[in-house]
Amino acid sequence: LVPMTASGGGLVEAGGSLRLSCIASGSAFEDYAMGWFRQSSPNEREVVSCISWKGDKTYYRDSVKGRFTISRDNPTNAAYLHMSSLKPEDTATYYCAARSWRTDCSVREADFDYWGQGTQVTVSP
Figure 1 (cartoon, rainbow, N blue to C red):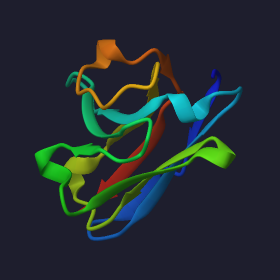
Figure 2: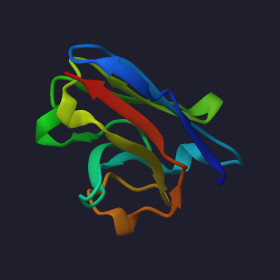
Figure 3: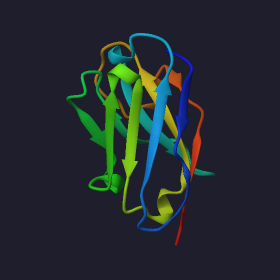
């Protein structure tokens, strides 16, 4: 499934929107749960959202509920995180991750097997 490429980050004003993309190479993308994590220095990396391998279950951390939407498109090996009503506290490096095999979501970083490189999101006041 590796490598995975995350993109879509940038600088946006508070209240704005961004869509992050994660494109995976390889086969069997549909067998992986996909997650988005973020890390802002000096904090630890935290889960933002996750979608199960079937796409029927999703998870959002409380601070992003109602503002972020995770989705996946298996034929194109893609996972997305649409972020709206962005706040300065959303500023972080965002990472996509894949969890094998045919699993539901997890909030634990250690449960994910493959990681993309980060994409920086900066939200100005």
